[in-house]
Image (cartoon, rainbow, N blue to C red):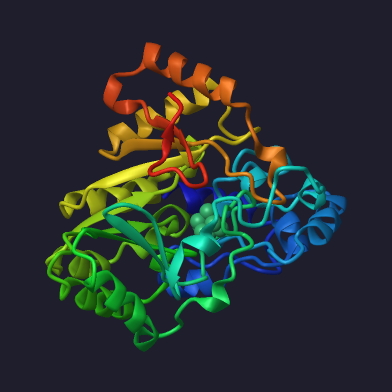
Length: 347
Ligand code: SF4
């Protein structure tokens, strides 16, 4: 397993806080995530000043990095494209015009606690505030998670709303990361949704199989396959270095179980804004039978302006990808627009 080999090479830096062994269960890995910028910088051989800046920059969205990701990050490189996604930077504190806490109008789209309804035919359940990682560009970094249901019983108004509208055919479990919930709770949620006759599909938007590949357990595959609803898993990979052997195997387990797996990425400055990187990502995903589905333009969320890539650059990157890859391996380049009836396709 690549991660463990690299972790071994980092062991000299990590002696005070050894990484979990590769066979640890996913919940133990989740609980053991790095939360202290100083520890992260020590483990990755980064300067203490980087840690101090990160501690100041994190604000109300603290650092969270699973140890399973550490072996994929190049040590001693503050510009590593995986580190850039998770390390708080002083630029997050800049007040940039046009960047807001809720640029997608999710407060307005919330029709019942935890239930967002933006587009015809499908709605989103914010199933949990928890994630395996805190992505610094997250469009929900300011989301008021405390207003969403915490236990199954609290979802009753949402279930009633979905049941009352026969035009809703699909529910998207989102968060946070829905796979941060135990399988038992997810299976209960899925069972309750499957009782609504007009629902056909259950989509899971998750980064967990990529951050903590142990999350793809037999229990997970079992309840997804066992549901009357067609399960679809949408993972989130932004850079090919996120896919090590363990992640490839986890994605393979999902696909082998007959579950359609798609990827959505976000176009991020300093991470994947070069055609070589995007081409390698898309080819790697296609090799693993994961369809590159969307490349998202960054949502203008307060604290993320330093990640934005101009739309014209994104369009050019997609044109370059089309010249290199088969059509099915080129993602749709999209952005969300407040009030639009669907995502807007940019290229
Ligand atoms: S895993 Fe998803 S919800 Fe969680 S911080 Fe990252 S982008 Fe946001």
